[in-house]
Image 1 (cartoon, rainbow, N blue to C red):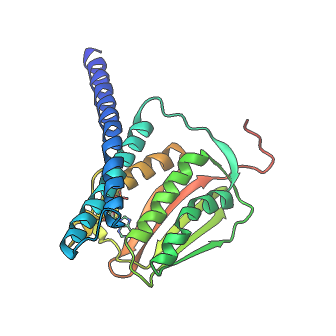
Image 2: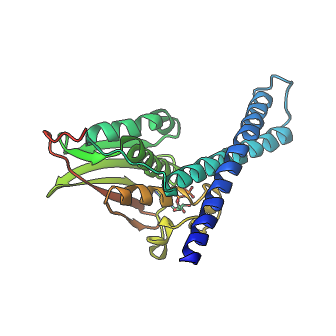
Length: 244
Ligand code: ADP
């Protein structure tokens, strides 16, 4: 079918294009960030308040752009036909511990609390370790991003009938009902005050693709000003099951 072939070619051009552009952004971004770091540390001389504010704004925008580039690259990787998932059995606690680790310092710095309540110490799941940790990382990162000092983030895992449910719950700003499904679409962000500027709107789209590639489901329950919880499912693997 002519149109299908053409569409596939066009799709390949599109993904190649985005991947190339994203890569090309990385080098200049790194030098912008290094430059602003040097200026912020006042190694080139003292800054007045106006100068500091400008440089901080540049630093913040470069951080955001870096996240956008990384999210886009991850999305392209997942969406391209080349995406390979290597499923093996892992204890769920290893996946959670590995995802939590990068945030321990940040959470303390921001005056928040991160609990990990693992009732299912011995649950084994079938997963691609790198990709599932990326997904869980993103959910935790959001929970931290959309909470204030004093808020709590709780991660739980429970097993029921061959399915492990992993939940990331926070006591943050919450999400209005009409967004509960939409936020999993690309570039959708809750438009409310300055919230839309905090991220890229891509993270949850990638997370959902990763979970669905595991034949799992993901959903959000949330109430504005009370908090949000994101739950995804994974299939269990028998302890004696060897997939290699
Ligand atoms: P990003 O966080 O980079 O904007 P995501 O796709 O990860 O993109 O999230 C989409 C939107 O969903 C966010 O912009 C935010 O409005 C909302 N959101 C996601 N997680 C939370 C959360 N834990 N609490 C409140 N809002 C959230």
